Structures are given as structure tokens and as C-alpha cells.
Image (cartoon, rainbow, N blue to C red):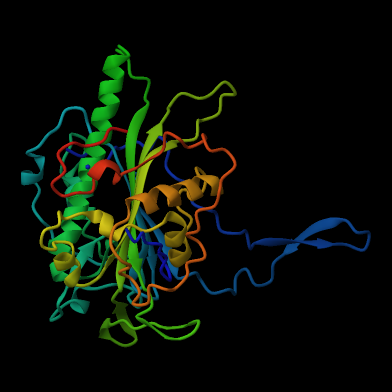
Length: 387
């Protein structure tokens, strides 16, 4: 069964490493300082672009708070577009470190104009929490974290208005599950090194990348090929903070190789396991996930890779993936989905992007796994899959 924006089937101690081995490179903005023009002889020459200094500034601002914590902030909605983290678990866990960090106050990003800042006052007297996109708990466990990095997670560019019940229940559980995924990935790598008797680590690592952000999806369908958007905003116009209708989270386990290949080129990281989730920004998300006689599972909120890219307008890990990989990811996701479509009321709507198309090389991604395979998205899951 397919729904309008996401396909549905009918039937894991954390260290934010101080050195990025293979951080994703996001597409560069086009160079507007010069353009090509043909002269009288047909020869291409450079001339100054007259609008370079006059064009408005993009509303999306990039903040690199640590080498492994980046925020793209939209000054129109005063919400993140995405927040990306790279999580690497240390082999020796420092479980008590989180107790030494005092929880700070949320604060505005002062590098933004006051016109575009998200402020604590926007949330006062509302039922919404300042929901972390990169959770503070990700900066509290592990030998290489610091209180300075922990405090940075409380910048308001890292938050969105989140239903308080959702923030403290299902969303917090999903964040904890993500940390367990990172822990399992590290344990798997350690076991592989021990089995191979590798006494000297050459810098290779299993890292977990997480991309999180808000979404605004249609409230209902009003006619054929017509949909209505409806969402709240906090504050006083014109400086309001838009309330998302949903939140997304992409989690991937990546094998990063520090050693260059035979051509002395850095190897492309290999995504070994993945999952994509979209959760409605409402308290019912928690109660729906705890239905009677059913084990709680995040599989209820799975979405296809290409569907999520279509509604966010983002290409996730563009330098690592091709179209065939995404089609394979769609196929694996559909296998793990459960329940009826949640995101739109009309389940008959057709999704154009979540089609499972036959890909050329069937064995190319045979070892790729879904993070929810074998019941690993169950909150009560004890047997964690290795990647």
C-alpha cells in the first residue's frame, strides 16, 4: 500500500569524536561572482556579475559548532533545516561523565541578526518544548566530550517547537535508540578487530551519522491534486517561530577507512546499515506507539529514503550514494514497515518516488542492512544486530 508522501506496507557510551575522518560534504553554492560570456570572436571570457553585491542573502545559514556537529538554520521559519552529527563510541566507556555536566539555559545564536533569532520568549506560555535536534545526551558520555560541547547543544538554532509529551517520551526513546545503535556499531568493529588479531588500529572506524530536522506536511487533501497545509507559529508577527507538523531522523552506520586506496585517494565511506523515520509532532504519537497487545516499535514511523528526500528537499550523503543504492534502501525499508499510513488521511494517494524499481546489479548492495531488521526497532529488543 502506498500513501501520498511516504510508502507504507499493509501487512543503539557515546563520544562525539574530535577529528572528522570522513565528514559529508554538502553541495557547494554556485559561484555568483563571475559568469561566462562569449566575445565577438566566440571566445569565452569572464566578466563581473553585476548582481553579485545586490542579490539578497540566502535565508539558510550554516553553523559548525564542533567538527562533528553542524546546523543549517532557516531564518524564515526560525527552525533548523537539518542538524547533522557524527557519533563515535569510545572502546572504554565513561558512564558517569554526564553527571558532571550542569544543564545550562537555552540561548540565542548571537551571530544571527535579532530579526531572525529564535528566542526563549517564543516558547513562554506555550505547550511546546525547545526540542533538541541533536540531543544534549549525545555530548555527555565518552572520554573525548567536553562541557563546552555539551553547552553548545543548547543553542536555539538546534531546537524546534516540539510537543512536550512527544519530546519526553517517544522522541527521547528514539534518541536513546540511536545512541544504542552507535554503541553496537563500535562493539561490532572491536569484535572484528579482535577476530582478525589487529593489534594496531590504522584509524578505521565504525561511525554513526545522524541527520535530524523538522518537517511541514499537508494537513489534509481538499481536492484532487490539492492539499492544505496548516501549522501554528509562536511569538508575535513578524518574528515568529513556525511549529513543525513532523520531525525526521536519518541514522546510518558507516565504515570509515583512514587508509587511502592504491591511487592514494581517500576511500568513500560505506554505509552498512540505515533507517529513516518521520514522527508526527503531537502527543498522540506516543500513545499510538504503545498500543495494547503490541510491542512498541519505531518501525511504525519508517519512511522510504527517496520519499524523505522529496519532502525535505535534501540529498542525504550526496557524495556517498547513487540512485541504485536509494532504490535498494527503499526495498529494504518497505520490508520493515508495519501498520497503516499515518501521515496523510487518504491511504489511496500514490507516491511517485517510493516505487521499488529493479536495479541493475542485484548483488551490489547485498550486505546492506536496515537498522530495524530482526526486530531491532523494538524498545524491548535484547538481541542487537551487528553491522
